[in-house]
Image (cartoon, rainbow, N blue to C red; front, top):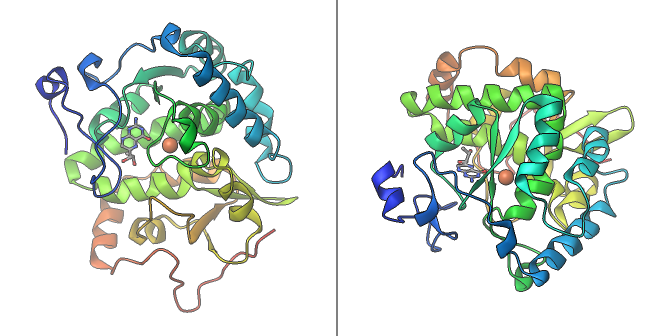
Length: 293
Ligand code: HBI
Ligand code: FE
């Protein structure tokens, strides 16, 4: 699924989530060889700024007791919620804190290009925003998901280092054809991860924090299984892209996440390939589960 530079210049959209039955969104004809493009901030309409504001206010109102403290403390760095932030201004603030910057992309980009940007501490943020009819849910990541969901924790030094380590590991994985295993690690931590705190379970995953309903569901609902973080267990576990997760993985700290990426993953990939995959929601015999908060 990796388009080459020429394909990008031909405007071929290279990547979609899942089986790819939907046409990819975004204008890839403007993307450079590394899949980055310009944000074109002046093209946003008043309606789009207002949609961003309403999405932001709905999520900001429900962070207390559900989002991890690091996220709640950092979300203000996105700037005024009334308008979609200018990526260059946001990058100036972010770079001063953890040497990350935000770069615009047309939408989902190939894994290799994605990993390469993360490895350079450049976080790809989709330029377009969902339509008003998608206020409650959009399948592909839009500018609100990427900014509100992902960027605040890039202000946290340990999490920021984890994201770069993940990107660097991803570049190795693509040579080992282990992208699917690494995609699962991204999915169950960066997108849908939970963290145990003295006050109880809290969300740190971007897919949860940017979701109207999944933020409360992931922390409070009795339905999903919550499994203590385990790299091999995560890499064996399939995920669903268009419904609430039925399995969440729980870390004790961002340091634990960063330390887990320290070893070379090659032997882990080999071990995981010897073991059967695990369906989302399945619980292994004797597995300790973590209760909702
Ligand atoms: N592209 N723009 C963008 N944003 C993502 O989050 C993203 C991507 N491409 C691939 C991808 N995520 C996942 O497959 C990661 O697990 C690599
Ligand atoms: Fe995301």
